[in-house]
Length: 484
Image (cartoon, rainbow, N blue to C red; front, side, top):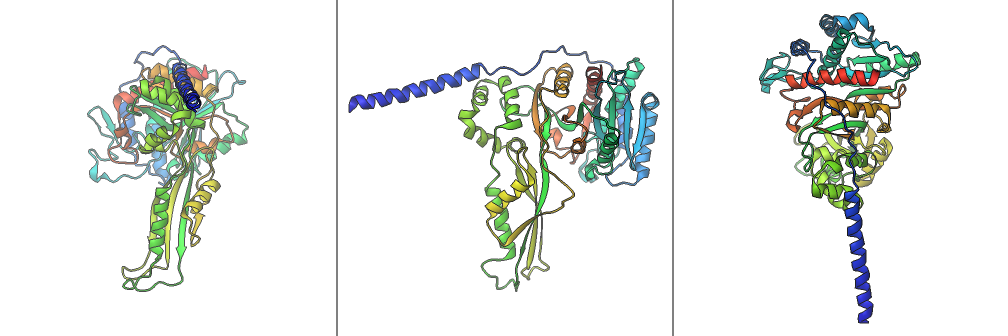
């Protein structure tokens, strides 16, 4: 019998040693996906560019503003960039969107399209260091709503084209610039109509670049360099209405065991307690394949062996809201309504839950999951707005020209950064272009900290002057790399 147990022990020990050997081997062979490029010198961007962006931020082009506001922006663009508006073909689409075309010399090359948007969200000036529509230049920053979402993209692209025209550059590949005026309110009159304009003329784009991820300086524990996340997909979007109706209400002084408010509160707590399942595959897996080899010892070992450490990794990532968003579908209660007086039990309670859907899942599967975990037939779940939202798009390829040219350009302008494919948690206008391209990427060439990101749709939105000048250099080089 002892010999039998020795044999079992040796077998277990052999399996353990084999497992350890395999894990170490995978970590050693976990090779870098970064490419070697020569950094470009920090020149060519004009100092006066900050003043021009400042003037743009002073126009409160709120989503839903009338056409006169966007006409002011249109006039400002033409004033700031006379070479671009003289040499490029310009189409005004809808009440405020623009499509610019820079024809290339080689018609056989599919064109590319860079996107930005002119509209901004409202801003309460109460807690701003400088008024949100002042365009103040102070302390090395340009302050104002739209400074990082997203007027800076529009102005940086056109600054770069103005420079290139001045250098007598002419593209081989046709370049389109699409500037929507209603991105913050679904993009149906801007990006959607621009895409339809292209489709009607049988334009097929090699790739589209929209706003999205940034270069983040403190992105992940264990990654000592900035992370340039290029979103190759984005989450789907849907808001569900949860509704409970009861036949009897009554006086709040004599409440029954179950009330409409209580049942809804329990349902929302069930959603919090039972998050959607996490995954480390798909684009999420690609993300870890790119960043893992660049991380320090133990983190590299764990990411090289996700098959072994998946529970530990998911537990750690789930604790960080930004990291949690790339490993699972998320559900956030955002609105709740019910009741008419403080002493009357309501007959009906509604709650709105905003769901951001991970690629590989759908609106239908998200609804089925919520129904399963709430497990209350009295609560009905319906889509809040069938005209807004959609399933996540298919992921664009990291092997395609678009990703490769972005990775190269990022390396030239942000040599300190690690490039990785990722998922955008936001819902961008790029979704409207699926009919005219197979490859869509989302990346804004700005170096930010997590603290800086709070300004987007928040208080004290700003961009450093250095960042804005680097954006101009980025787009200038991207055009050279993509349109040569």
